[in-house]
Length: 395
Image (cartoon, rainbow, N blue to C red; front, side, top):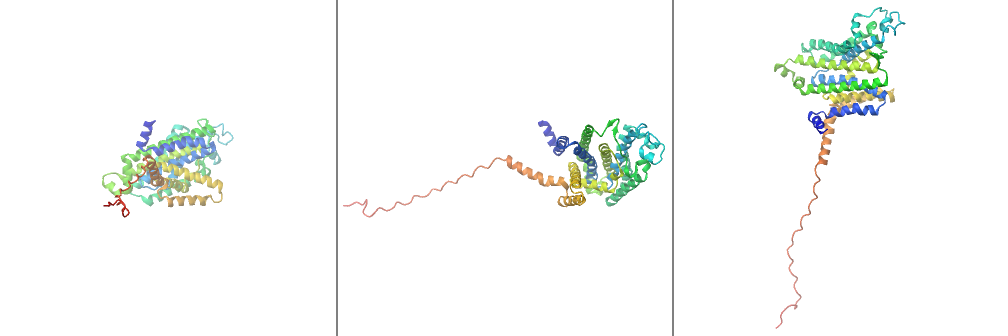
């Protein structure tokens, strides 16, 4: 046990260990299955926040379209689940059994050929990561090789989010339209709506999230992480040193997209549906807020920020249904104005120094009581003169 504690302290993983205990032990014991399922849904957004820490905090690339990759990963998983739920027996009342219900409503008579690979779970799992990563590669390679960055890149990612949202809604016969893909019940015959399934999915989500935190932390501690920080602060100097800056930017942007796709797939499994409302501009900006509230330089802080914002949204919407949007806006503005570095900055700059001072005070031995200074020696007073006549000699 002492060796494990020493290793955690040496690697600087104390905050990760505390987060793991909170997610794996405290929350399952403290919450009922309904609330725990909500926490699991919040943690799926944590994957997006981790990606934003890497791409924005370390790479200096602000992306306002991470909802695109979250949605693509979610739709890849939803397509597999929807095909499983659309077997000929379950859809025998349709005019064309064996296809998803929204295709039948839109007079499609056969499953589109690009849907067929999603009948197989291995392909769907690969697509959850591959499709968001491929799109991220196309966008980032086209932009960064032309040295497009800053606010221009942020606007382009917003445009991509808008385009994909319009495309999904417009192609209702293939995507489910504005309603998305609903009624997702089973995974290889396993009912994902039961309480035991929700517990398992929560732990799977938590395990993958903690693994992603460790992966991103390893990248940060490596030479690549140092180069990302250098590019963020002095991009021209890194380029003049002989490094291909565009390639590093492409890599970190694709990494963030892959993490977002994993989060989207886990969201679909835990919630049971996927719709374009999680793809557009508004959810993408909310995801940036998660990282900003937690601290865009802290992986663990981003997870805490995601939990705080979503807990606040749930609490305010339940307790103050008419005012919750204003309260959420006040929370965002207040946190960013009071704590520019997010919750992680408060911990690093305020909490940790205070704890160190308290521990140092307790560990230091008590000061000995001050010794009383010795009283100075006084010279003898001259003897008082004898009364006249006393002690005199008489003849």
